[in-house]
Length: 306
Ligand SMILES: NC(=O)c1ccc[n+]([C@@H]2O[C@H](COP(=O)([O-])OP(=O)(O)OC[C@H]3O[C@@H](n4cnc5c(N)ncnc54)[C@H](O)[C@@H]3O)[C@@H](O)[C@H]2O)c1
Image (cartoon, rainbow, N blue to C red; front, side, top):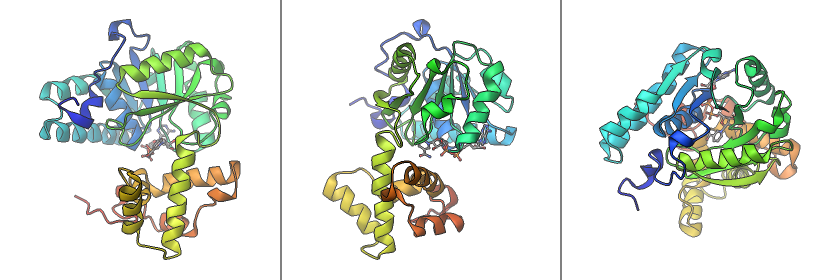
């Protein structure tokens, strides 16, 4: 394994196309939250000029602060060098000006909240400023790529790019083909995935794709088991880690992803697929109480806030 271990994906080693020959040079990432900041980090680390956009300067800055923190940690753990950190930061720019972020971008990756109408409205808004041939990608965990693509004039260039949390560490990029996505868009997206050190898989546009559909099923069932007092959260997680070799238990993962994010996906899959995805009452109650997992300091576990 590369001496930098799991962090190596931040600084790609399996880049088949030299950056100068890539069709993607400038990238806009919309939404500077958990996913957007991670996505912007790996894009910037690959040498591309990357604009991270959020609705206010403070929110955009929070995204950059997260990138800084992740890079500081990587340097401290000797998983990255100070030069690699500086290189990434040089390429990462933040803005609260949507036109500026998107103008001239070859690829736009949207990572705003999991709400169909909100995502469509953002893609409609960028119609005038994005280049006609730019690839437009959504990081949705579950919504229909084909439905979001309704908002753009040329859905052939619209695609799902589903990254995983934490983005710099997770190897998978699930590429989701909408009904009208072109082969050219898929090939460019695959090449892009490899150029940022990710392993792409190709999935048809169907509710929850491959990863969320299975992941949410495990997550909601684990929550139902906590609700029914079958075992503690820690013991359920240990069952999956030691019994099935999962690196993280389903409840730890729910805390990491965010209970609100998982609830939104479960609600959607319940409507789109069936009863097996009905969100457990406990999940709804915890979200209503603001127990959102790591980001709020409380979920199935407690996270002392620094
Ligand atoms: N959290 C995960 O583990 C995970 C994993 C894979 C995919 N996703 C998906 O990624 C997307 C983002 O999830 P997240 O966890 O990063 O959410 P988040 O709440 O951490 O971040 C969302 C960001 O979008 C910003 N935002 C809201 N409205 C906006 C707008 N109109 N324009 C630009 N920015 C706007 C918010 O200010 C916030 O900073 C969702 O579609 C989610 O389903 C999440």
